[in-house]
Image (cartoon, one colour):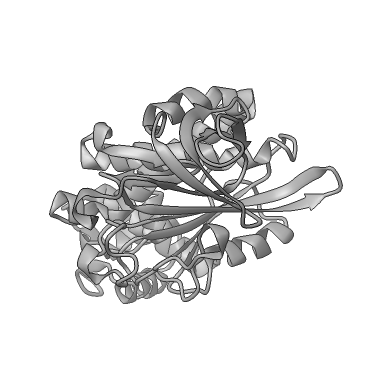
Length: 342
């Protein structure tokens, strides 16, 4: 973080603490150990970023409003984590937050570093799919992890991330029963997808050097503005609630729950995460179709989640009927579409 950014953050924190009471330039100068000219410069920089600061040079300053931006100053204001999102790289736009975070991982950035973009020009989901990423509507983030678990156990981190997203969505929706996880990591509200999660990793020999956990959640985008191919099967929190949500507030909630799930995974592997995952998993007993990587299709009935995080399916068609298989990776579709998509 540059000195200019640090100075602006310190001014912002002081004005927040003062609340509705004006704080003089002299008081800010003395409190922060900077010149009056530097105070004025930092106030100007904050205004350019969208902060509403009342007052002129020589008068007291009052913070009257904050921008709808996922700046580090906004996300970290009240954030209750020890390591996730303690270091945030905010971008107005990028091709992919995962790509930026991957570069930071190679450069030695610490675990928990988060990249947040207001918009993505090439957002990606699982299996190479595009992720719709309009500006200033949702959250697009990538968290850098340096896990100590084995390469074999690393893929189950994404199931923990799905729990964190599901818990956050349920909190803001005020209705946990309407939120579910479609294996392995799609979070649905009333059977419509509201998030995308993508994990990529870099290995060194037999261990993971670092992993990138990309999470995008549809918050304030209007469902009717989705590209036509997504519209029947996707939704957003605002579309379900009928009003927008505070994006910075949601980001804090998400990162706090993500840290909790990652800590559980570090201490006890997927077994520690599994009970909460299963509380959101409602596919058991449902007819499903699975397109496995490589092109093979399985039609059957979902039986549940195996200890290693795989989806267990009883095949219902063809020569292997009745066989139980563990699906480690693939695209799962439910036989029953959303009610008004039929």
